[in-house]
Length: 258
Image (cartoon, rainbow, N blue to C red; front, side):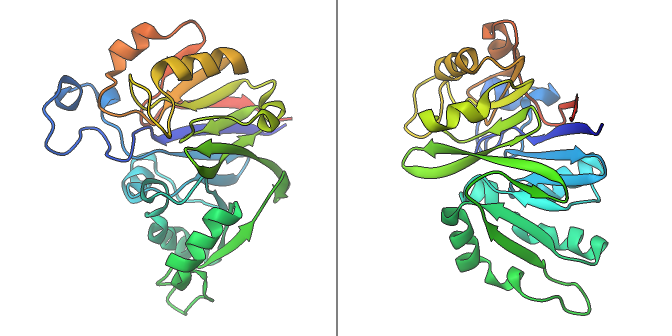
């Protein structure tokens, strides 16, 4: 039986925390749990390493966590805070001396092909550019024997994806979970869930909305992610019911994989 280990590389929103120019209590906090890079996760299953999104802080996150192996990237959507670190994949291609597979919906893969076509070319002798294999997916599939399940979500009007691996699911950047996706989220041991602001927002979940979805989905453990500086770690933790907690950069957990 394999073990799944998941690490929150970043749990921040597009601005990160501290936010530039801000002097609020969260941004001035010396608690490391209030310092948030852009949202991303690293999932290890056996010897395989999967990255969820490539935000602009990817290099910093990889160095902090000592990452050296990457077998595939699972994309949620093409906003800059989830995609624009794609060039840092070249380091993993160089270490591997081989290409890395990218998976996402057609909306995201089309954006990557249009904006980052240079990274989808054959390798040079120096491996000085990313060498990536773009694959559009629309349902569960396997990568080197590991089953990966995309979860269709709505991020405002954008068709985005969450990801399920084993009994863990990562749902960032969403305003609604379509009814057809709910069966894909049953029986979760660990759920990571978007929680942007105290107030409602057109393309994200507010605190109250996130807590309501956490109760509805009923995962054994729910961890809030993708937070702005308006959500201070301890203050938000005090609002969480049993079974719900506030994520932070570097948070880790292990689960058994069947």
